[in-house]
Image 1 (tube, helix red, strand yellow):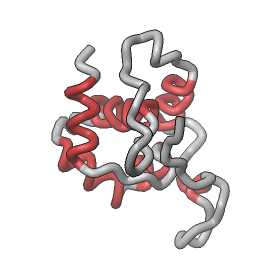
Image 2 (cartoon, one colour):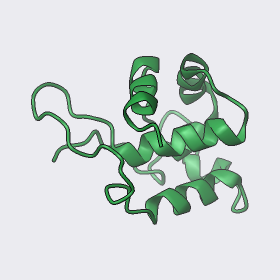
Image 3 (tube, rainbow, N blue to C red):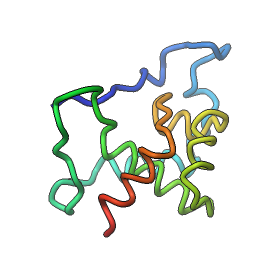
Image 4 (cartoon, rainbow, N blue to C red):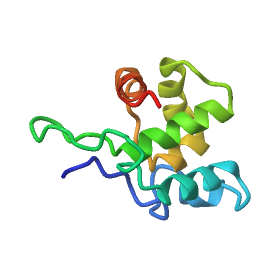
Length: 114
């Protein structure tokens, strides 16, 4: 199964240093990242099978990380979460530079209601 792959967090990019340097070791996004990566989301009922046609899908774990971040920071709007992926360094780090649009975020919530 193909998924869109984010960039390596240690790779330097348009920022003067890697994104890793901007996120403190005790930042909550590191906990979200470790927690979601430790889950077996398929066994929890998350949709993990996607059509092979067209553009590869975002990995459900990445979208779950964004959803949890939004929940912890009182961000419910898919449009606001989309904006955060483009301007908030914590979210950029958490999603490895990925920026799903608001429809993708909304569809993830709709398709995984529990």
